[in-house]
Length: 202
Image (tube, rainbow, N blue to C red; front, side, top):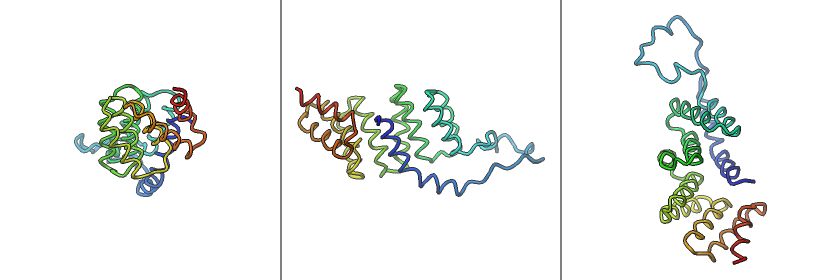
């Protein structure tokens, strides 16, 4: 199982119930009637121009991403965000695609926006830790890794990311402990096994 699959599995599990709750409050788009043309330009919203719910747009974005079309996925996510600006899953996925595309500044902005809506989301803390590590901001990365572990101490991805951070900061013995912990939690975590083997061979 890849890192992305593990990360998104955790994200999907976390957001599933919230999405279910949100769906219950949604109403189907109203059918066109004679009053449609009386709507002033100032009063038009994203709903006026698109019949799709944020959830439907999110699903389409996931499909586009899986098909390798990041640009389309991002466009759909931005449309979903216009309809539901306080949805941490949408913000998280926008950030993730920006990060995968190499735009860490935009990714950081959206990750922070997502975290501001749910400070106890260990998936977002984990993603921020990886982003800060990639930027060489190891202190900030460690803060978010520890925050993630405080929330969920049984996530193998967090221990793997912590191991990577410790390798970068030349704490290789501690890194071995983190990779070992990740493998205890998920024996099929191939990436953790590869990194642990590298350290053991040194």
